Length: 389
Picture 1 (tube, rainbow, N blue to C red):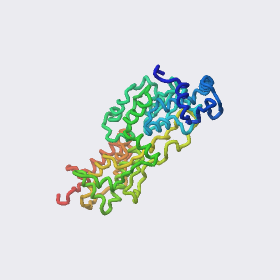
Picture 2 (picture 1 turned 135 degrees about the horizontal axis):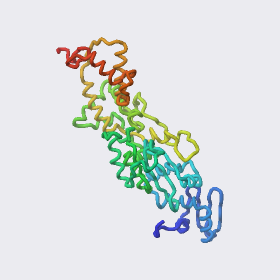
Picture 3 (picture 1 turned 30 degrees about the vertical axis):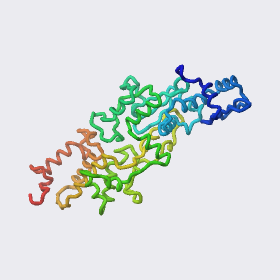
């Protein structure tokens, strides 16, 4: 605590004039002196020195009040998020104080990020962020960061160094840790990894999340993206279902899709895990169980730029006229083509071992199929794409 900071007693004495009522602590001043109460004790008519004694006896309650009103960010979304991190709605002040002072602290998952809160001097909090898969890794094995602005750089690429066009894709890189962050810096780092998620999460909790549905979103598109609006005609609802299935599944994005075709027309595909933070039962320990606050913790309020860009490409492809092609395939070859498409769509192709020739999407199996079925011009079963070839 710096010299400029008031002591807990001084801060409480000053606040008592207007009254304090927070997390079970109530303090007021009247003609008889100070009134001080916590859930398991009450004192009336205290002098200034007796108030100091009561503060010492119940310091966790007082330091908790002081932290949240003088040291924590006062912007509502950030304040609510940090209280969610340490389970302020679920744990009493003494329970939180004990867990925060434990070496493990209190950890909750925000997408693929484990956010850990621990107690510091005077009841303040310090925070640590790391990938959930690195939760048990020794800090010495990770790249240590102290500047929250580094989070924006980290989110740009995956473990292979490939660009991540979607910040909420489940491909956050591993091997890093942000340490000793103050409350404001912790929120900045989270926002750097997952932009706007804290703000939208809070708006949803407050009932003020403004959702822009597909119809409204595409009606605003201009220039090269204006072509997407053609999907609002005819069987456009089916097209948007396919877009959402391709882009908005839990395996592709950690957000929970709240936008639909329009305000009155829901899509037929699932929008992701819709359970709210804290809705899953957890073991009674200092660690959040896997899944709580993970997939679906933050909402998606409108079709993102990646969805619109992909839809533009699909719009042009869907504009082609259908043709009938005839191929001769064995039943196993048909199933193999289906398996190859599934493997590529699910991102499994790179995980299939060359030696695993039992997998239909195995590289050598695919090369054999190509050698057998493609002609010298690369046409499947010798059938050209254009009928006049």
